[in-house]
Image 1 (cartoon, rainbow, N blue to C red):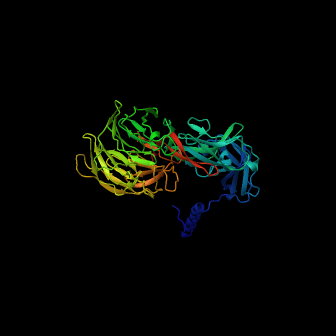
Image 2 (image 1 turned 45 degrees about the vertical axis):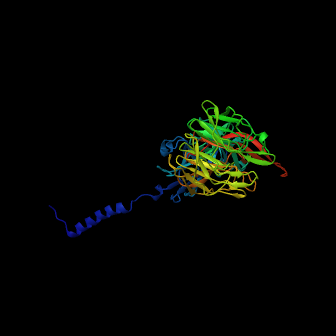
Image 3 (image 1 turned 60 degrees about the horizontal axis):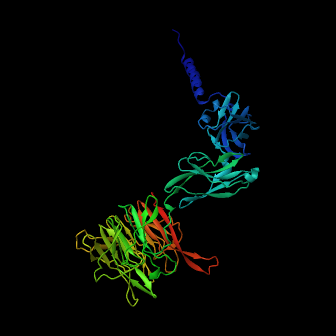
Length: 565
């Protein structure tokens, strides 16, 4: 065995250490083999081409052998750029590092994905970033969609038409409730069309006959030579509650009355005034009508007997298969007269029956409110007019038991009023609004009825006041546990078309889609099968010069579909 001196051993160790550590810490490689490629934004050149931009960095002063872009309309394919056949070559930056650009083809009905690359010797580098371009760059969505009932106002913007001298044949919006990226002509897609355009503007179009309680997807589009292209982004908008026109009421009417029955799936209406001006007794009719839910149209009921006094502002309600009609007013010789004139109408055999007069302590009234809870009829508030035409506003309430055909007084409402409206729920009713003469009211109260067979009078509790303007001659109804209130007129003779929802669980009010029949008073409204129905009444008509204002009798009817979210 040979021996080594300590110096020779140390020298060998140093040589080995130098090789090992030197190889790990500082590889001996030409730095020009390494460079970075970045992909930049694009800009349109023509409808057939766009300009893409790339950047070479960290290449020192060496000029690359080649550079350019790979592209595809398939996003997945761009992830494996070596396999792509679609390549555009560009002139490399003359100083090594720098920008380069190339013209790529557009795809009229698709997005083009592109990626920059560079080659130096055997080394080819692709950018990590993949960018995209669509012809939607010159047409884009802008602004907020404005939804009005079952229509939506959509906005878009053109950019670059003037700069590049582009003339488009058509433009507009395409929308769908089922397709996240809607396309013209695709199933479930509808289109607005605005015609030719060649300038940079913000434009709008209107989508109509939309489905209520539905979310839509929308894109702006443009067409050139029968080839469409779309905004790269699709927006969504929600159509919520709203109104749909149904068959007209058979006659023009105001201040009639109506009552509905979920059990019988129908409603009843009538006993109003068929002329625009104040109705005298001779102008009043006994006509009454039945609503056919299947056809959403009205059919005549048999007329009441001779002993039935024609009047308007009647109270009416349905219990079982009986329609009850009472109270109301008529005018003669400049005076107002009230009548109780209480009748039931058997809905099965179309027979009218006169019922007994009320207790002597029960005042006559008009413009009262009535509702049914626990198969009992409740009537209260309203206006009493005596023989001297003295007016008294009432707060008393009365309960009618149809089984024994008897009335009894229950708890009075805290505040007297006329023209109140009511929302009826399973276990209670909410009453409010109206006026006492020139004092208009927006307070509301919950009535909790006595238990059946109890001698207790029931209880009133104040709830949230109506946040809108106080009014009279409004309409109230209840749908699936929510109360709805709107239309009417205030003390300044301003007519309303607003529509509000009252939630008894949260004790809150919220605005809903306004009534689409226009501002009016003296309408009839009821709820049936999860929908609301509202129509007739008087609409105010102002001539263009503003010098003549008239009331126009209405007979149109509308169906209200509540919002689901």
